[in-house]
Image (tube, each protein chain N blue to C red):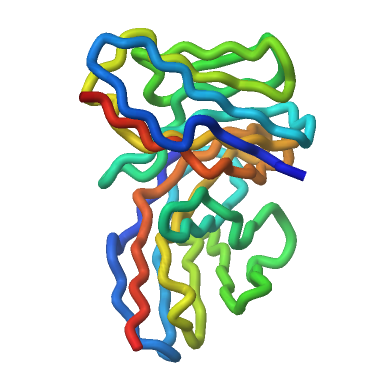
Length: 113
Length: 111
C-alpha cells in the first residue's frame, strides 16, 4: 500500500516570495509522482509529473519539483509566487505499473499582497 | 470539446434517497475514477474502472455502486444516502499513462 504525506496543511506567503510545499511518500514499488492544483470551486489540474528520467521536473508557470528517491520526497517549489497561485496543491503517487492515484491531504497556499 | 463533465454540479437530497451522479468523457479514455473530497482527508478513491464492464473498489466503496456499460460514461449511485456522504465528488479519466484528468465536481449535500 502507498501513502502520501503533505507536511503543511496551510502555507501563507507574500507575493514575490519563494514557496516550498513538502511531500513525502511511502511505497514498496517504483512510483510515478504528481502535483495537482485546485483553484477555488474547480476540479484538479495537473501541475507537473515525474514518470522517469531527470529527477527535476518543471511546469510552464514556474513551479518545479525534485524527486528524491533516497528521501522518498517530491517537494514542490516556486521562486516567486503571484496572487494567482493562491490555490490548494495536492501531491499524488501511483504505482509505475498501475493507474490508481493516492493523494496527500493537500496544502492550501494563500498568497498575500 | 467538452473533455470530462459531471452532472449535476450541485445536489441536495435527503437521508435514505437514491442519488446518481453522472460522469461523461469525450476522450475514449480506458480508465475512469470516482473520488470524494472532504476537509482533512484530501481525495479518496471510491471506485475505478479499467474499461467498459470492468470496475473495482477503491479506498471507500461502502454505500456506493458504479456501472460502466459504455466507455464514455461512469455513473456513481448512492443507493441510500447518508449524511456522511455529504461531500464533493470528482470524476476523473486517464488513458493509462498515470495522468488523470478531472471533472469540475459535484457538491452533494445530504440532509
